[in-house]
Image (cartoon, rainbow, N blue to C red; front, side, top):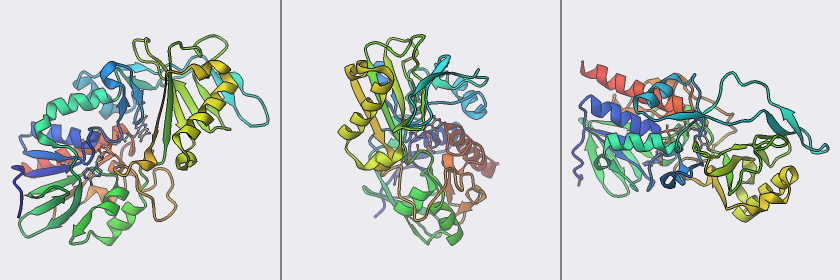
Length: 357
Ligand SMILES: Cc1cc2nc3c(=O)[nH]c(=O)nc-3n(C[C@H](O)[C@H](O)[C@H](O)COP(=O)(O)OP(=O)(O)OC[C@H]3O[C@@H](n4cnc5c(N)ncnc54)[C@H](O)[C@@H]3O)c2cc1C
């Protein structure tokens, strides 16, 4: 028996694409509901400490002025940005047999920007507009079937019949975790299974400190190391400069060891650059995205970064026009990035807006 959802359109996923799509479709007067498997909003946007203005980004962090759709959208929502502090120098470690040294940073024509308060500020602003009543959290979509006059979505809680379904899952995850009846076209399946999920295999690490010891003339919070295991690290203090942190990427191959082991490796590396002061951290944070089953799924073959991102097959609709495959990886513009997510949402809303006119 079908459960009542009172909606025409189901959007799967409350990440940036899902929430932006929902907001734009609600503006058009459409009836939508979002179904999200996690207990939280944001998907690959995930700011720890957001509520207390001690933001530590475990997911998306940086944008640029070139990300026009995202940048304009942030302005429209009154979500402010600030420039990522890089400093004039970087700690550079080109090779394991030579010691790291302080290198002059080239002038930066295109600064990286961060969102004030954390990237989750964008998610919060969108969620306020969409309304929590339109979002089902902690409900996982398991299967999708098309019948003559509708399409039905079965979750771990209910089955709903609607007019249209918009998926915002990374395509590889979609094909591996949701069953379709009838089956999706073979060409779509093979492209999706080889579509890279941007940053799905990354590990983020951060440490917070009561004092920013790296901010002085003979040091830097910018670390670029070919030796690792942390390859890049940056100052991650908040906009107000009253909460201090360093944050970077740990080589993704360390997903299989324990958190304690990873922390030990990070501290050992930082000790080389800064000395024993690194031991006086307040908190260690990490996020191993390969362990996140609502983001990452192993590939059947070797897939290169951004492979099949923005593939033209995602510009089609499926199951007789009732299924749209959206999400950052499907965008022809900056796929994989927040810009791609916003562009994808705009594309869907234009498509459904045009269908009405
Ligand atoms: C570590 C990391 C760093 C990044 N850094 C940057 C950066 O600096 N700049 C940048 O522009 N981008 C960055 N990105 C990429 C950026 O986060 C993504 O492009 C963007 O957030 C994708 O949004 P989305 O809504 O398309 O997908 P997602 O955020 O993946 O949303 C998909 C949603 O679907 C949900 N879901 C999954 N399965 C189901 C199911 N069966 N039923 C219901 N719901 C389901 C998920 O929980 C999730 O909320 C980074 C990503 C990561 C992981």
